[in-house]
Image 1 (cartoon, helix red, strand yellow):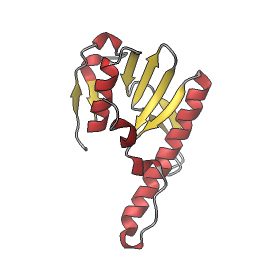
Image 2 (cartoon, rainbow, N blue to C red):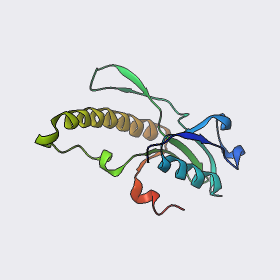
Image 3 (cartoon, rainbow, N blue to C red):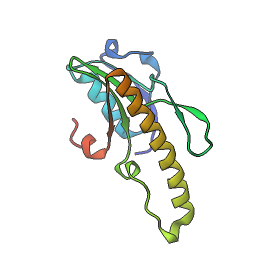
Image 4 (tube, rainbow, N blue to C red):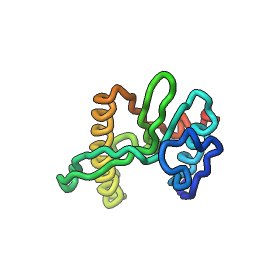
Amino acid sequence: MAYKGKFRPQNYKKYRGDYTKIIYRSGWELKFMKYLDRQPEVLFWSSEEVIIPYKSPIDNKWHRYYPDFWVKTSKNESLIEIKPKRQTKPPKENPKHRRRFLKEVKAWGINEAKWKAAEKFCEQKGWSWQIITEDILTITK
């Protein structure tokens, strides 16, 4: 699933931002973009256009987080992150793969900080926050 490319929406007027520069970073993101583009209940959407500051637990500095999607329907607005299910839970230690475990702990800490910042950001705006995994994407047509 690790590939990248440009997405060209058919309903470009629904996109908020420069619709000629929409980048997907995985097949799951591409699938979700196609879904957003063709769903009539989706009024507007964008990809990596919203910026949320967050403090990294790794270097204790402020960084910028760009959630994968902002979606507006007639009922609500949402920020959505697309992630593999295994990355949505803290890593489990494996003595055979110590280096990989440390890398996963670092990634988990950063993601958790980003997601907490996104939750707070959404709460302040009255939006919803959601992490979508392959479980949902496999049923999305």
